[in-house]
Length: 175
Length: 462
Image (cartoon, rainbow over all chains, first blue to last red; front, side, top):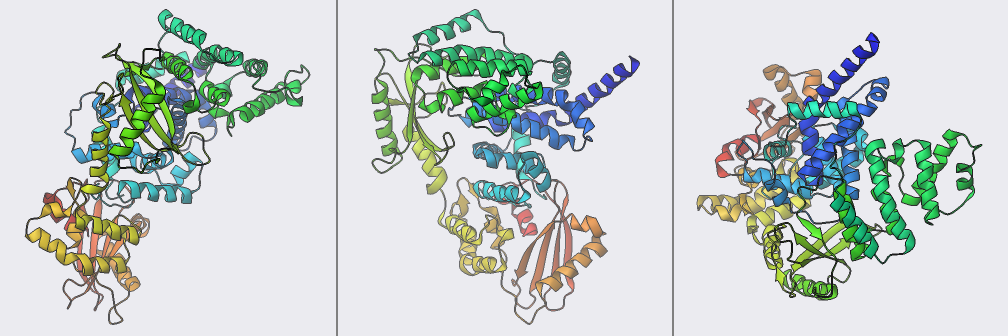
């Protein structure tokens, strides 16, 4: 019995660490993906609940890269939401305006770039979120999405062209 | 990544979205409880669904699925999606879909319901049948929504009744507090749907200066709606959707307009949709009109060079830039004509900074790029202590052949680390004639800012 309690405590601690470490990034990734704060909160919740349920299996398989694993779950959850949501237009400006008030000053170009990322087609948005926002390597992104690194590279280049940024340290050129 | 403008922009813009300690504790409690927090179904909402279902004119099977999908969604809340279900639930679902005529009887269905079939095999058969119905490749993708699309087809091809019903169903199972609009069924007193589509089509073609018939290949979708702010004001949202060839739902492009009850094109601030004329102007401004001539020329060159950023162009493209554009850019700068150097609202900083140098092509009198790069790596080791893996972490170098001082041509390598804003960028210059290190400096990377005050920084990284 003691053993069970101890195991639960370890599991709970690990879960809390994940939420604390990756919670913001998961939530923001979901927001960019879904363009709706309420949906993003739902998706973030779904992501961690799925992670909780699958935690034991994840540990049994060696633990590995928790961030990549969580991101795979988040992307799958968002993908499901995205497919199942009503096929409707989304006013990105309004979506951003409806966020809780910020305490930091935000440059207009940051908002513009955020909206440009949100406007990307789904497949390109996925690679941009994982590579740029989650700062994963090509190989990690490829693993998360179940595609080859060269596909990731190709999609990134396409996305960069649309966003006019460079993946190896360039600037936004003023779109 | 030396600069990661996207991470910087997203974190800044979305800084108010975060998971608090309270959220984290709640998540753990939910996880341990095993289910998600969802809004409870109100009696009024359930009644609304029943009412809409009753008024629908679909076939009997459709009606049955309409009722059944609500049960499936409820089950998903307690048991998760289809892939997680016990075989009994999977069989129930398959049986129901068979009864409704969506899954035909076959040898597989016979085996599924044969008590002699092993449970594991039953599970496999159920999955095969459901994957075939939904055209999915992974059972994890199957959920109530996906089955609904398999049964009814793509949403945009549905009747108005179906769309109104579906919006109400989906709202029941997600937090709809932020939903701005509600679809309603059109009555005899409403402006007719076909006329609304015609009005919107004409307005869009005119505003966007599209050739006549340009929207003929688009899929028109019209929804009559009201908003919380104006619950009795009924207007049409008309969309023209261009769907990617070979797909049912992949939206490539869409135009839309709001049409009021008298057939006028309007802006609708309740849902944040501007008048179609305003949308067209914004679109044109963004895409075409505000590019200065020089910026447009620069981007045309970047298209030919195969990369939007000059740093990664070939030496030939950089030399072409210097040869054809540099003088005009510097003249515009001297005369204070910054508007001539803008794309949209912002100056094209890389272009402006790059015009301060003359890029050329090496000849046989100077050391090769490879030899120069080896010298740069030695400088990285000797001056900054980088070697082995640490040096490899600088995955790519921007390469320049600088002939600003024609007597002293330089190979310049700007080495950028693989990741992390805040790390250093190293700029190493090698004398192209002697192979000696002419300059080696470390520059702190920083978020991009598109204003002229940042020019000194841009000059350092080019």
